[in-house]
Image (tube, rainbow, N blue to C red; front, side, top):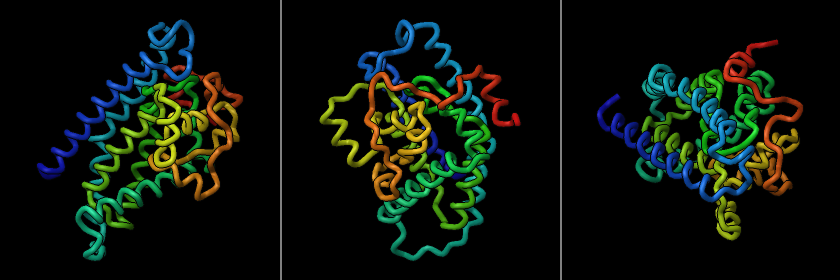
Length: 261
């Protein structure tokens, strides 16, 4: 990886870290839904955050060892077929739009393909949503996502910079729409016309399967409207979160769960 791309990775990490810290504090000062137990600083809630952070730590280790090298390899072997107009800033904007469109379908596949759901279910088993939930993914899902992304990069010739910028934007929006931050109603409604907001994504985590299997959009909210997967359910602060008919597990159970019959 050359120095400019390495600098982009560094700045992406710093920006995402600062955003995560700011929203983590803001959602505890201005919560949209009541915190479980005795509040955001209760031992029970901290155990949940720690469980999510441990899953994130595993994936942080995988990034420089597997995810980034696999993406770099895909960029290196991808055929250079793109026309001249698909370059520069217009090309970057088109890349971001196309990647968001593709991740809508990847997210939907994670719910509809049984093998993928076994791993993605770990993310949905969280019984409450806050910024830490945005980081809670099984390493198996991360590896499968990296393989799918590499295939897309090879097929469509995405530059490494486009992939890195999209990943940074994806993390920023994902942290936002998993957060328990209370927004003014008018602001949230206006934002929801363009991007996925907490009110949209919380319904996706509702402990009712028909709503879990809806609202798949990640950055732009338009994809669910275009492809008929937008839920008619409105967010309720008392809405139960999780997977219908299943309970949360400890860290060991979350790691080995997808491999059990």
